[in-house]
Image (tube, rainbow, N blue to C red; front, side, top):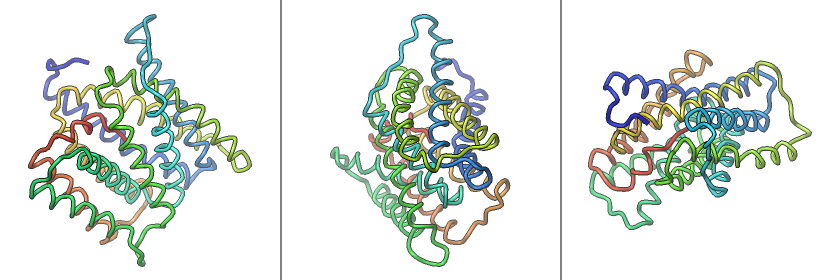
Length: 295
């Protein structure tokens, strides 16, 4: 970590790269599952494996022989649940819709935790909560433009799992070492998923490449870059910056995957991201966990 010595230009660059990396996870996963021969279980396993390797190498490079990984099994289970749900959801969801549902579910989980812990909402926060939940419900309600229900449920579950992971990762020391340890601990669960899904496993060179890029670059390296930037940002600023991830994913879905943007999606995006933004305009204590949130 470079702390307060980071220059504004470098901070902006790090934030831009990190947000593109996080949005890239949605694009890489959807691209792989829609246009290559890899299955969702293999994608999840390869993503976690390559992410663990990248993070371990970075921690080892920084600490040398004194490399010690942190983390815990509870966080590893949440990480695996997120990665698996994420991959299986993208069998049917467009990248833009998936990224928006994921974002909404993560933030709703963290808001709910804050309320459970006794946080009181101001008027703007209450309005933001209503808008965000309304947008999320409106996006998945039955109708001609509604996304597939199973895919939506899987992505919402992935968002809840990531919200739990983010909350459990607070105040755990070096976030890179913690994330590396959690990635390594998630590998037995990924192996178990592969065994259960063994009859349906498949992969090709392109799909494998996308999965490795998602794990090593968009996840592993993306997290490290984000942690460096988040270390010198206010938690509220870090959380608001992440409002750009679904937007970047939607733009990438249109340009790279040829996806269409519907009126329902636009209205839901405005409601969800606008609602979350209202939380940070007024300010509250619970978003401290959001500074280390990743996708």
